[in-house]
Length: 296
Ligand code: NAD
Image (cartoon, rainbow, N blue to C red; front, side, top):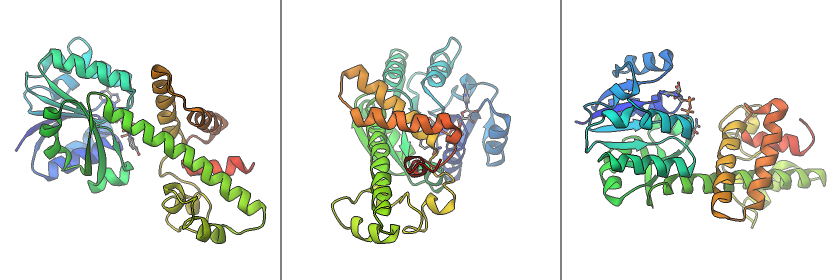
């Protein structure tokens, strides 16, 4: 059984850590939030006073933090994890962060003799709890091979995406497409309904025609056709507008850094930005259908 340090035990990390504990691994945990830490301790983790302590004398470190600046700070600050981890420790950062931070931090880790991968996830809190997340992993093939057995305990599909930062690149490109397709699906429903179709009729036709996509068949933004979608639950998340906006901003920043032309990605970021600025950041991201219909 491995000795694991876990940093960031929020909505996602708390469940992921729990799945590692359930598999019999020992866990040193750290979070700035006492509440999050207490929950992990109740599940069998040992609370540490700092991130650096959680990363000391362990075989593997897993982190699940909000953004790039937190990851840079926790690992790279003087007296942080990199200054305290033993050479040979495997580090898995599953936070969704900007590609450049992921690449910089992995390069710093290599200088310290530490194997590190970026391994962002998709699947949300439900997937974290059930241990069915999808992991998109960037780093050396060797580091990926070492990380795979640990990731298997928290996820169902584990993809090797290539070198450092490629996991983040896959994640934000995918989520940019999701943002765009949700807006497209919403526009199509709004148009069909304005022209006199009901949502169910349009769904029955388009979900088996060329307009079919995940936003329609698994997450339909119009209430009615798909009972499990947030549209039938007052657009409670699910996947909140502010989370989608975070990923669209990361995609925009990454596109600018390599000169990639992503006009629909930019427009999606503006539309989700407006929805958030209007006070609806906590709404499920499929709620954009209401804004597009002029009902928000
Ligand atoms: P969260 O805010 O619930 O959890 C983040 C945790 O990190 C918090 O408990 C916070 O106290 C802790 N933290 C912040 N700074 C810290 C520091 N310096 N040291 C130690 N702990 C620190 O967020 P979440 O929903 O668990 O998301 C975590 C990451 O996963 C984010 O990058 C997010 O984009 C990504 N993600 C989330 C979802 C989702 O559905 N929630 C889905 C896919 C990816």
